[in-house]
Length: 409
Image (cartoon, rainbow, N blue to C red; front, side, top):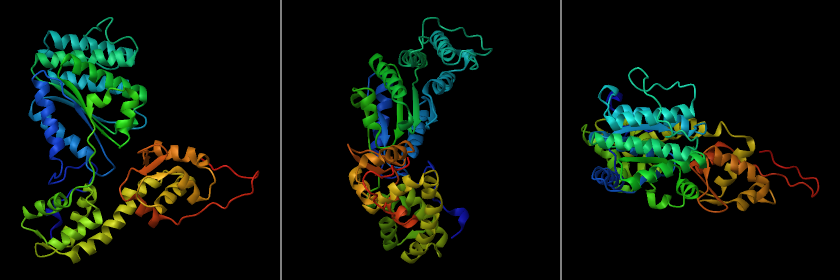
């Protein structure tokens, strides 16, 4: 079939042509907006899941829904270098300007601008962030200028919320990859959202991150579990996976044979990103407006090669040799979460503590997460299969006691 007609979208965070299996999360988000619009508090959402399950896609869908309801939306993707305070100077300014332009600011918007000015000068005394038509806004002395991020951010959020309520709209911050925030930054963010909920101002946070986020949020603030829902999204049910492939094709007059859908589901295990890759490749292989099991078999060879060279390989290229060996040992033990001691034994080490720095490095790089004490699991679906294809298992040769070399890491 024609490449130009290919409906599938195997990209990072790219919205699929059919967003299936996420009705519960979308419905809960609409309820959140409706309740905040009525001045009623409601738990927000921090969506969790592995790589490639559609967390960013869901955030983008939330953003479109909010904008359709005239909410002011601001978004950012966090990484390991992100500091929250400088980020919030930019996002706070964007939020204020989306509530209304400087020439139309009412009393509460002008006060929010002054609080924002105080906040930005506390973060960056050089005053590089301009606020107002001619940067004429004076800081609100004594507000958002304590230098304590949790307190200052709270004042900023509340001021933005009052300005938004004056215009009968709301503000929503959409943050991706929030697991990279420091504990102090995450605590400040949770506290600010909590105060907004208590004051019933229309400001909230919706975020996404890896599966460790509920634990990290709970460690930052014990009441986080009451402030947020933490829906975990993952693989699609078989009927939803079939629909994700067949519905876009049906609209273009192309039919997926039932056995072809079953084969695609078996390979992808229902993971949304993999479904888009298989759908795209099968489209290129199919002829006569039909996708057959044989088309899928041919496509899977190309898909696996592409995933190995891009989706998977980009993650191993920044690892040390010992980190690679650690993940290869995990892969040898299967796809389920692994105990540190079992991984150590598989690699030929007597004590799991010897590999502690290696395991910690992989967690910091976002390749592993800890679903429970002493456990580690891959953040990427099917990564165990890739590691078995990528490299052989090499066990450490034991050394005599008293002459043991410690692992690098």
